[in-house]
Length: 182
Image (cartoon, rainbow, N blue to C red; front, side, top):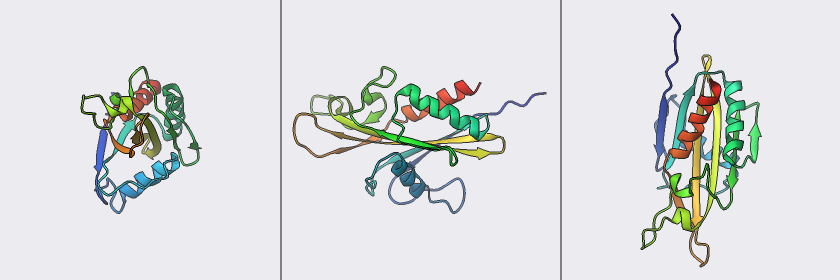
């Protein structure tokens, strides 16, 4: 009888300074901040900012999962400013995010709405930082992905708005890795 691995997903919503981690002694928020720095995001998250770390198991080894992950980023048109094969980490920051797979930025990010219910993600200039890393887990791998968006009005001066992930882009990245691993 052949054993079929079960894919599992963990999403950690990190607000404030700390979050529970899968491994004891791990400061997940610190790890997420480091991943975002690798992606080119040089600003520290504000204390109340919500960051979503998505963790998906992939039924292939970590080296293969990393190679697939890199090709998924390229397919989606996501910037790759940092690729470290030895640590299986990659990421980048896209300035003026446009459609990804034909979907507008509001499919991936919640940046709030104007008084006429227009999504700021679609009407503002959006900067998107995305980072992933692959961890080896007993013949399988875990793909961790985090993203962070910021939006700024295009035609008028105004403060930058912090966006919250919808979780959909992280899910799409993991789904494509799983599909290509088959």
